[in-house]
Image (cartoon, rainbow, N blue to C red; front, side, top):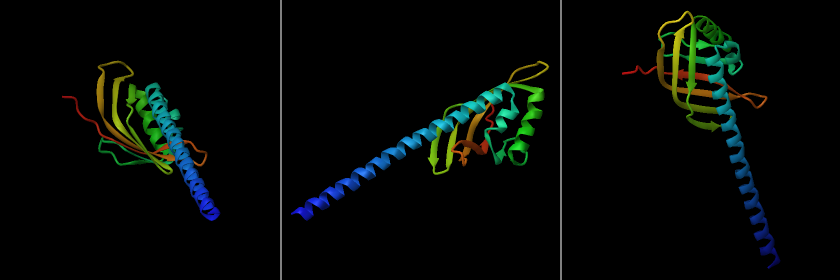
Amino acid sequence: MKKRNLQAVMICTVLVMILAVLGAGNGLAKDDETSVDKVRLAFNAAYSAGDAKAMAGLIDRDAVWMPPTGEQAIIGSQKIAARYTVFFEKTRSAFELQPGKIQICGRWAFLNGPWQRKDSARQGGPMMQHGGYYLMVLKKQSDGSWKIARDIWNDVPKP
């Protein structure tokens, strides 16, 4: 009888430990989702401020950017930042990656949703509106932060 009680206690203990670990894992996933969304918000702020250097700080060193403009993929945070430096010299933008779905898979996070942007030439001129859908892949860095590792988006013309 004592042997059965000991087994029951051990089984209950193991089950409680498993549930505790699963619960902690959900908390970690929520923390990661919050961190990924903070990258989205920081990217919006840097883009709208025309700050290519701040944008580069959010991008993984080996990132790949795949714009819808027919240009080849841009590889590396320095080349991506250089592209935006040139763009921001000529253009003012109000930019928003809107909240979307976040999925965490180990050291990788997937973020997708709609985006919109309003551009005007720095010297003045008409405002142009752009928008579409994006898919970003973020990579968890060795320090625990998240950086954008892949970005692909489309530009859906307004009717």
